[in-house]
Length: 335
Image (tube, rainbow, N blue to C red; front, side, top):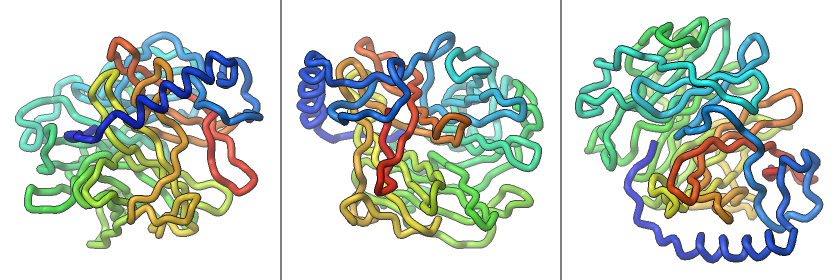
């Protein structure tokens, strides 16, 4: 989920005008037209075709043992959707249809919880999710598990980590990453001093020790929603910059850096440290696609699949899906 935003939308509007001109000239590339890597990266692609129940916010997706897809996103009791083909999505209820009373101390008694992260490992789904109120860092991340992923099947495993108003970080937007040695980590964070990482116990999914890494920051500026994806010797850290949650005025955009170590340091394409505001942009608002962000990445059969939400001209939040390609230097791009 997301916190208050004060960034100017001027740069995003200028980019959207430029992209609109490129679209008119026929230079924009649609993944629905071709899944080949673009020969001219002149404009960001539109989302690929998605149908069915496509209203989402903060989507996260896991492959199921049967080869389908389970999507979780921000909502009352965490909203669930399923798909067999990554195109058509069906409503699947809520993870916690009876609410989340254990989180009420952080949500002002609301059952609306944020930004779930879902992973299928060791024969079960692990879901980390955030409890907070808008603009506050009195926040917590909880863990739930399920063997099926179905509505009402989730067991609350309790608190993983919390932040208080006296802290300079915010315990929301969790993302589980398991490194190449099998060690579990949780990245998290929004605004304040930036994005953090803690160790987890692989046996329980809960926090292990007091290890605490800073992995990205903008000096208090708008950065959140870390997602770490391993490929080809690198851990890629995808983050969202700028303004979410403002409908068609949102200026969210997706940035990336990489490291050979899961704990960093992460740097962008120009070599700028992500702890010093670095990040290489790979997707931003264009045309009628406003504020794409809160991204998730999974390795799928055809390519790395890239999920996010964006806003329509009417301000509705929708599911976006594209694929990721990697250039000759190993940097990702969206197509």
